[in-house]
Image (tube, rainbow, N blue to C red; front, top):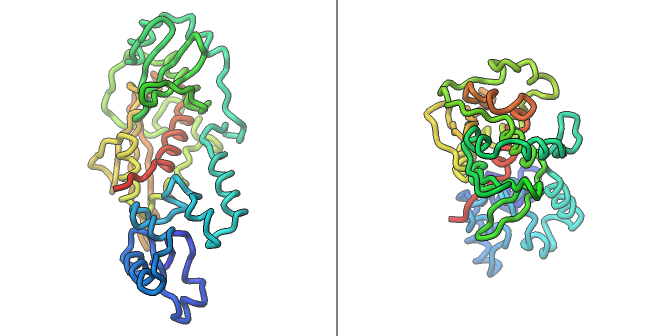
Length: 306
């Protein structure tokens, strides 16, 4: 491996080509272990970036670490400038799946709150297989998160320890409301289908086509990374593809991700499937948004420190 944990590609460095400097390698590589040992011997201490990546089993900081850019980069004279790090932070903060097909921001229509307020909450909870807490409040899961929909306050809150914090994710809030309004008391049929098999399959074309390219770029050659991210989101492993997981974003809406790893001969492939009852609970545009949100959560799932 000649790309270092920090992202520097040693293949394009003259020092590497002249044999003056050896590559650091990914934080999970044998090269990283050897480089750290050499740095301790020659310099008295290892590169803090490489040492951190090695300790936290992080292959590449820019790709795998949710804390990037961290103090190890900000406090050092290299490898990146303050301008580059500021750009990275700004764009990471702005990255969100909460976009419409035309690139606009997702907003939660007030009419959805009004519709939910008029509905019988007991029936809503039975249809959505969620929990009624008290007047005007509903408890429901989303992947590994626990959410509270407070109708009177018109807000969606996430449980954090013993407190509830209002979420700042308009797409998640919108999907929760749409699910509660539309969900039906229909059991799963256990047959997986793709969007082309749905009654509204024509919707998923052009700008509404499911975008799997970011996941393929990240996990197409990294099954282990896909497995780790899926486990963090509560995915249940399936004996399909090279790696496949069933996720449960909403109680009655499972989503299945099937990945085939790429190699020198074949490009990686990814399929996103649903139980055939999905249209009983979500309209086509909500299905599209849900896949965007789950995919984004996979891309940003933190790799646990071991």
